[in-house]
Length: 469
Image 1: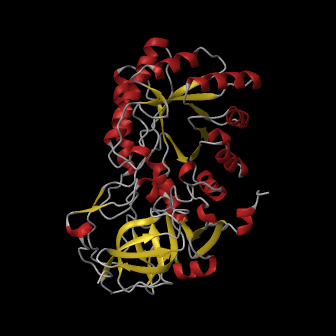
Image 2: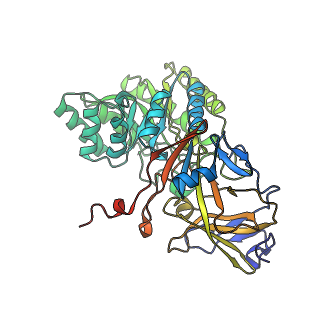
Image 3: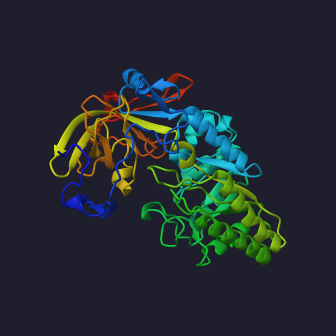
């Protein structure tokens, strides 16, 4: 009975599903049965995805062939999808700069793609910087972020000649001044401003309200004081302001408020110091659809709206319009990535749901456990006309919160050995991957025009033991 769509006991008798795992939202909307369990919603899946001979294909390759050659779990990246989104951002912000946010997903091959597509790169650690420099990424197109950059990290950035360093604290201003004086260079810096915008997103990924670790507050005057301190140091060149209001945001209103407040701060800086800052970085955080019904943002609409707001404020104050920079990460990498799993056990919990366990879990995708992220998943190795069963897609780790997709419908004839594809895993899944329970991290394979190649190899047990004495 429980392998088919039905209201399953008390948890599903009402209009909500009550979460029973600590740390997840207390209530979640009742899931609707999809009209077609085999369908691939275009907005959610990579642009080259489809079905052939019943199986899901990405980049012209059957996922069964990918699983056979490279194993599972497996991260699959649609190269054409990734590159096409880079080009869309470049076109929309043709009079500004687009910097890819490396934290979403970075490896040497991704850095090459970003370079070839003409985008800049945002890094927030010495490790991310090392990846970029290892493939010859132009340092002048790199921006260094971070709320607690060490002296060593700042030193590496200064010596590498990165294009911008985004200052996040008063201590960092002093550290940079010391390093610049020591090396006889004058790095370009921006000030990260917390503009007081409450982004409509999860608490853990909202970053522009005052009560959090990032940036210097606009409302308290800390941002204005940072301007004074930097301008007092001839070793540093203040070139602009930076803001990032959060992540997975699909409402443009927050970006518009942030742009307006930063533009007004530019005016105040001109009035107090007679200094005109030429750059304004409005960050990223643009959301993507993960499930049917999720909204997605039109890149051109974002670009036109931000440009209009900043232009109006600056022109009304007699200031030249600054050069705009944006920092998309998820909205470039997210939809381009799919994770393939093999089903292991299919366990009916009578009166509730069916638990489908896969050969990965929170080691390759911790977002569901971390902040209740939603995903779309389908039976990928074949089509099925079986009745839908209310399911929970779970991993193999020793945690009850080890879920990949908390609530979904899968075909009632799903069996061990079937391949399951989870969409929208191109951002923050490999970046947040871990070795919990000593599981090796999966390989990452790029697909394009019927060809597949490994861009990050699968870890081995030797990798897990390396470094242990």
